[in-house]
Image 1 (cartoon, rainbow, N blue to C red):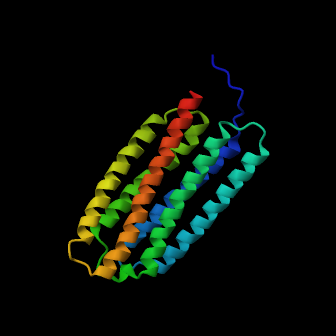
Image 2 (cartoon, one colour):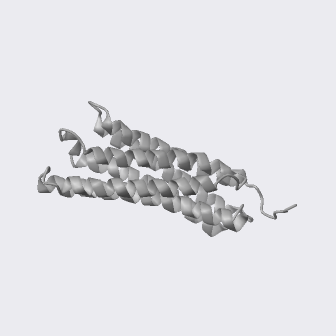
Length: 208
């Protein structure tokens, strides 16, 4: 039988889970942009609210680390995982803000490939939210990081196709510049989800 001298401090897992649940809220808000007659300003403002809540969760996590003598696993890994979850939320908020501030939703329609990228992010967010509570037992996590990495490849493909669409001549030069910035934030969010998954894999390997 394997004994562990680390405590099973529930607060850390709860904070990771709440942070991941906020990512689901974020991708669901971005999915609203595909709906006809959507209030883009409202989506942007709600994304900012969720991002602020995520910042508070990250702050609470850091306070918890600094006030806990023995953590469930390495402090550096706890810091890294919390920071990476927050990074994803920052990219999601940036997408909504840029689409609103640049007035891109006034186009006849947003590129299909952009919505495909958001769909990939939505799948990654739900997968991550399902995985976070399992950190407590460190069981049944391998499928999570494998699938999250596979989805990141799907995101890369959608990103490349979005660039092809943007530089096809369909849009004027200024719109291309604005949309490219949005595309880069979407792609960065996909990468950030993969970084979260890779960190979970590292933690699981250390604790196994």
